Structures are given as C-alpha cells and as structure tokens.
Image (tube, rainbow, N blue to C red; front, side, top):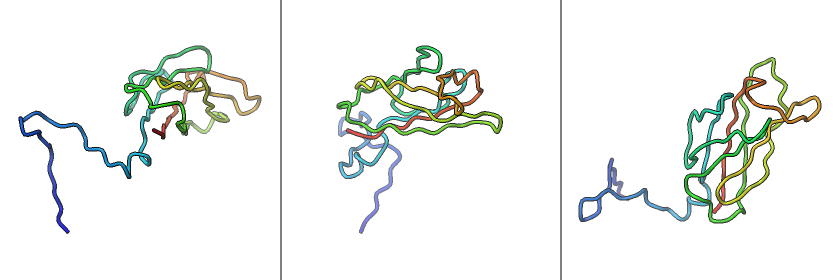
Length: 128
C-alpha cells in the first residue's frame, strides 16, 4: 500500500482544485457546523454564512452552500456556566438554506435569548 501526502493539489493547468469527494465518507461527515456566542458572533464554522437573531430565543443559522434537501439531521451542543439552567436547544423551520434554533429555560421551557443567560451553542448538520 502506498501513501500520497500533499499540501495542495493542482489541476494540469496549474489552478487549485477543490477538496476531493470521497462518497463513502460524504454521508458521515458534517455538512455544516457552527459555534455561536451569546452575542450571536460566529466563533467557528463550516458552511455557515451567518447567524441571524430572529426574535427572543430564536435565531437562524444560514448555510453558505444550500443542503440538497430538507432531509438532514440537526444536532446541538450548549456551552454554559454553572449558574445557567438551560434545558435544550430546539430546531424548527428547516429549509435547504437555513435552520432555526430555539433556546429554552429548563424550569418552564420558555424561549429565551442566549445573550440573556450568557451562553453559547453549537449546531451540527448531517445529511445529503
């Protein structure tokens, strides 16, 4: 077995190529992900162009490249401090261009802004 290592792949005309597609891995790798701060700043991302504050406790994660369809899976993570009682981040309004994110209090499941409770959240998208 041989191993090829290269920092950059070039076309025969000298222009840079895009990342190679490996079909067996494409379905197992995230199509988009983002970590969003309490001020809705993007702290890190892949295939996310922006995050929009839609209303209290509701934000929209906008994709740079649209998803193939709306049959994708959304998972999340929440970064919080010991004094915050966040129950969960829910999702809705999934389109090929964005997914909406809702943050809820743990005690009454009321939708609340992440800036109000000083936390950050992460969203990961898997699918076609």
